[in-house]
Image (cartoon, one colour):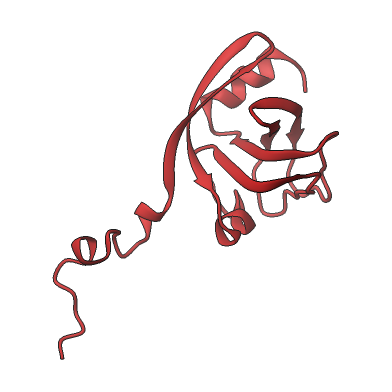
Length: 133
């Protein structure tokens, strides 16, 4: 029996490095009367949500999708600074600038989506210029 696959992408629908498991999508929202459109990677399972931006120097913005609304806490261990924007059904409920090595960061209200915009992203600079968070 030959265990080597000739074409793993064709046989399984994703490549060996699991790059196709990351769902990339456009995410549009309005903040302070300014419209934003970001290409984000969706984190909708426990593994991608647990890793988040940890250990990543260059990353696209991450969109965490949760099934129910809660005030979940996040941390910024092993992360570069980023902006966290919490959403409840498409409406922003809180935005914070998160510096490295912070613990127990929570929004004011319950949410079902979290957008993390890393400091290496152009939109990060637009957010900072828009308002001193």
